[in-house]
Image (cartoon, rainbow, N blue to C red; front, side, top):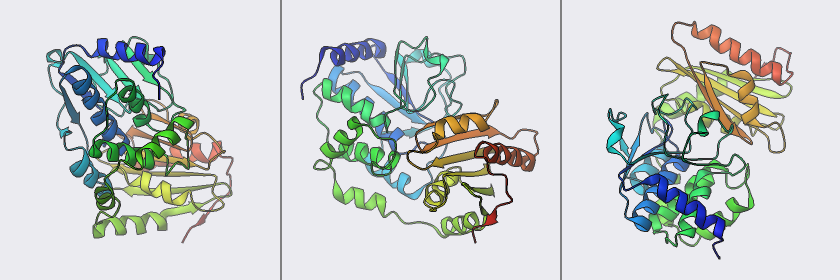
Length: 339
């Protein structure tokens, strides 16, 4: 596919923003496959196109069995650690799959990164001073944006990177069933004959601990079904990504138009929202129910947020969020237990 002048111009802007290196590549807390694959893709572009080194650093936890297998098998370049005290040793700081001010990354609040590549809603005012920002909320996954730069630079994908990008795109769009564009579909199809099927199988069939099924059982028992929506308050959680997994499952309930799952992990309330295709925009919905100091974002049929509990009563905070959600969904009845 021919590369147009606009793509080459953007590639040149990215090169200029990166500097001579090293580039510090960051993503959101508790990164998912799209985030991990996007960081690897950016690091590959920087090194292969311009011999610019980079350092991939994530914070939080990667606990979901599939994501842990993904990290170990396909993106081992990522390191877990604290934010460096001195960012001046880097020629640039890049955020992938997140934005400054989103509240879900460890970038210092007043620091302006040099590069931001993301696909989440909303477009934040904090992007204005960023030298290179490519944020497209309509696109299904951040890897789709990175693929354009790799293609423009003529960088071939090795099997691990191709598999990582494929799985990142697959999981963020649920196999192209939500929030996709022609660019997402084109990338998905082009990667099919480049992936390492044996590694993909190991990831998708990763073993699950007993506590996973116990937590899921509690989540199903906690689910309350209303006329248009489902709410599951998971209470104290052993992992912060449980609401997302529960929401992915519960949105498949035939009468549900939207799902809210929420719970507390280490003094932070995590919540996930899922909506049916062609229904309400989850990214806009989450903005209506999460207010400062909470942070939230998303697009299409999926969104999430987190709210510090601090000195608040956790039960009151959970009730407030659930109340706002039901008000927006115009569900005023008592609801009934799923089980």
